[in-house]
Image (cartoon, rainbow, N blue to C red; front, side, top):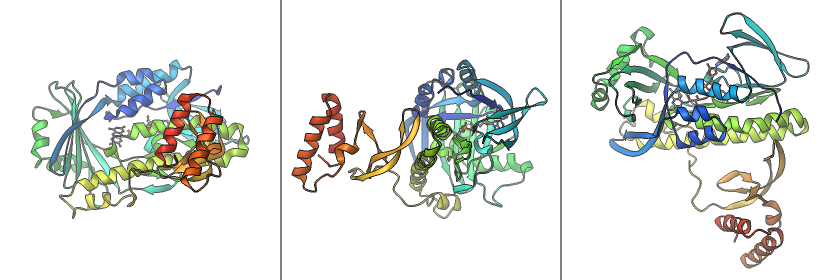
Length: 420
Ligand SMILES: Cc1cc2nc3c(=O)[nH]c(=O)nc-3n(C[C@H](O)[C@H](O)[C@H](O)COP(=O)(O)OP(=O)(O)OC[C@H]3O[C@@H](n4cnc5c(N)ncnc54)[C@H](O)[C@@H]3O)c2cc1C
């Protein structure tokens, strides 16, 4: 869109291995982050032992975040974007609505820079904004171990006090991550973390058998992993993306996909806020609705997965997570219905604007186009009787869509929602 972008980056200070879904890999490729995508190895098997049964059906791409984060920066630089390695310090509002930034450089000293628009992508470290939704307090304790090389693979185990994820990276590096409650009084003092961690895994032979012949490379460290949806996603000339907007339960293995989803929606929103200030509320609504929708969808899927584990209903870890965020179904209904036309916020090229959209039971944010055809003119003022409706829809398709392939796709959409 022709904007000059400056990226402030601070490498994360701890070693980390994460499992990416095929969707996250596609997201990286779609965004042109090719060096980053190339860091992901082939998908390796993921074995889940949950509620006493073992399932080998899934796989994930294991990735060392240190290498991935470096590759992301290389991709950003090769796109012609200036990168400053440093820490964002205090920011001050400028008269033109932008911000004056103070950056503490990694190489020492500090530098001041101004910007018209600030995108907060500081992950869970981003402060402020308030919480719209916050899940049960959770922490993930990580032990990195070294052993002989083994084929890449990962394992998920449910335990009375939480769940464990074990990733064997192929080069002998093994990450053992234990997610437990972080409610007040549930964790030991930092000095006792290692022995507490070891005592927790000790009774679980499927875990201890897997780490035989490996030893810790350093102390256990903690990463906050509570699900959080921020309240203020856009304010003035500031927009939050990624974990700074919504940080999800690591059980979903979906954090990076969700971070990419919000980041890919952001440019058109920022462009609209800067170039079309009259449409500000529409652009804000577009962004907020999409982020909230995605957050809730995966939070409910996570809840359903927690509900599958039924052996420890009295344990507060499981009791809390099987009831959060609510009781709404996670999956859209199998026989979706058309609910009506309403004005919604749509992505039109590089801007967001208001337009009539078709709302359905499984697409509550509304559908604007199908195969490039605007739905609203086809669906306006439909008669109640089935025969008359069919006739009118077929006439409208015939007169407005000249390409048979597009007409077929639109017809299939109308059939899916019981309109044809
Ligand atoms: C325990 C745990 C396990 C996870 N496992 C998975 C998994 O298996 N799969 C998956 O898809 N997701 C996983 N996630 C989620 C995933 O890590 C995040 O969703 C994803 O990294 C979010 O990307 P982001 O760019 O928004 O934030 P981050 O990746 O957190 O990046 C934020 C960046 O901002 C930098 N920063 C912070 N403050 C400043 C500042 N003041 N100035 C400059 N820079 C700053 C940080 O150093 C960091 O580099 C996991 C999360 C946790 C907590």
